[in-house]
Length: 148
Image (cartoon, rainbow, N blue to C red):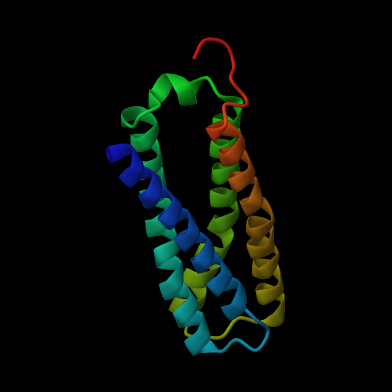
């Protein structure tokens, strides 16, 4: 039962994170005003909270749930998924910093700032499907490296 609960929580958190990313992409636009900048900054806090929860639940699942750490630690797709999640996290840093600056400045972002942040958001979106691909491959036993 723990394995099922952890899997469900992990999947819901991942979909929640993608939902927040989609909301940011919709809200960050050329016509964005100061109220929109404050709104996206508030939403971005959830991005960080969900990302941390994904890591906690995901690693707890890898260590304590049915398959256990030996299964995951010897799987190339597990590590590809971790690296991809890390890259998405790195790409999320510039938008988070920009959102905080926009909120603090009390001014709406200019077109150049919006365009730059949208590139980061789209890069995150582009990487997201890899998480699902790697998870599906891993769950089916592909990518085993050595003993495991």
